[in-house]
Image 1 (cartoon, helix red, strand yellow):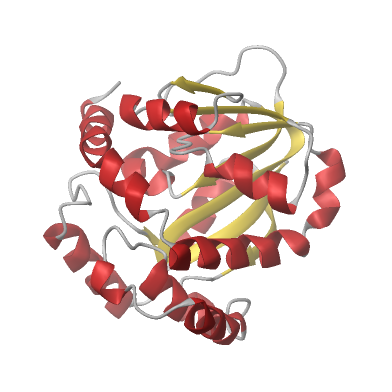
Image 2 (cartoon, one colour; image 1 turned 90 degrees about the vertical axis):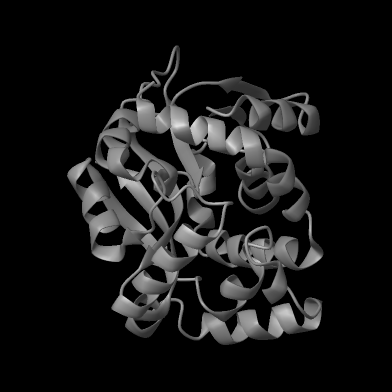
Length: 258
């Protein structure tokens, strides 16, 4: 494990409890449900192809819950994370799942390869290694297998400056190792690693800003489910077009290994 990855491991061990508690807020859970429900519904055709799933940097194993509720019910799941504390929390919450400690920069699948990789908000924690990680994870994916990615991105100078300021001023982020992606950069990393794009949306708009990161921005977490649903409905008007891409603070994409 290199120095920066070790630094991220220590950082997540420190904030794991706070992260876990904040991610249980009803507004966050509702927004997450709406985002994944709508995106996976339009890609439900891939469900029949998915039997084995890998979730690198799995955190609390939310990828398992998302897929089992919105895409497939019966599949073999394997998750791993480099934070021992997050692995312990995930195992406690999901005692029947196979969840282990491992390093995404060096991970090698043992046994059968996977039909789908789901990675939610993990790559930006190891920003400088993203290209190598995507190529490495591709070795664990069957040809024609899928990669679901949800990462913080920006595609304008103002969003970039806002994110840089937040990362420097909020101790929930490790400014030395974490960095949001320039949208074209993340797109290029996937293509260079041998993936082709299947679908993509830009949900990092108003509802995302207010409710997706309650641990980092508790002061923005106001209102109830009616407000969440209303703002999400507005966001959906833009999350598939160039306006949404320009304004969004996140990108949700589905890729296929060539």
